[in-house]
Image 1 (spheres, rainbow, N blue to C red):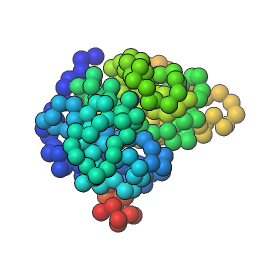
Image 2: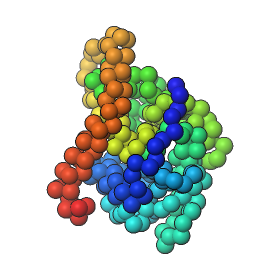
Image 3: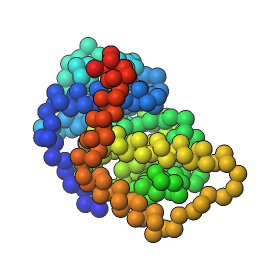
Image 4: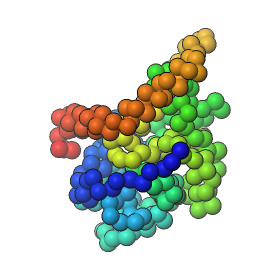
Length: 251
């Protein structure tokens, strides 16, 4: 697969800050947060290896366009801020951003369904509506402990290869895409696949297995939806509007 560098000039930094803050708030609104932990990062236009990310110690609810930090691939500050970064969180994000020019945004979560799924040796089940859309799109990385060590970076990158979903076994997942709406769309798809997989696992009897050609067709159709970036933007914007109606403090 050829990795095409991003057209990073589509949105200004100010617009990206607003959109990324909305992404953080959506993750909180949907109940996918881990207290003050985890990250969503976004490549900045016009600057080599500069990324927006959340300040250390803030809940996702507290992230604003103004307090997002600018860091490099090592997670260290590139611009002054009263807030501190969490360089440890960029062991995963930094190596992907540094070596995948097609990736603009990365989100890492370990919700209960996702973490439960990653504990099983068989990985993501592709026999559900959502799982089938991920067929052939998932890499797997063996758990080595908390992802804070530089020597693991190259191994995580090798596990991901050219895919856009990385299952961190016994831990969680990272998803990466060209922009924020596409990354949110992919994260939602993985979350739904995990929820359904966990629910189906509690029902006695075998799964209704899909033929390989049907799984591939679903993955191809999902790719076509992805290529129509407007589809992901419509979905993201609709969820932001709903969130702001329900949570006016995010407006």
